Length: 116
Ligand SMILES: [Zn+2]
Image (cartoon, rainbow, N blue to C red):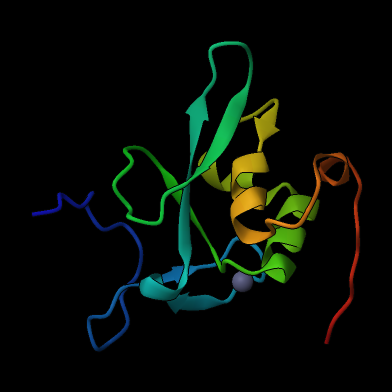
């Protein structure tokens, strides 16, 4: 049995849990969104961890696991805001999961691919 944290987010009328993507801000089924949590690092700041099994403790944020939503969330610094952490937040683990082809150097650059 999996222990779930108390539901704080809204549910759809059918009782299916829905979450809001921190990127596009659209609501989607929790099953379609990737949960991420922030973990404090020993050195400094925080790191963002993907939590596909939704088992990690603490406050979670939700993101469509697609590069377009990731890009928006990065640009808006939406992770830190959603997770209520300030200061340095290393999101590379999530970037690697969603965009395995992105190289380390590109984390620092804001690539804006505008797709419609
Ligand atoms: Zn999204």
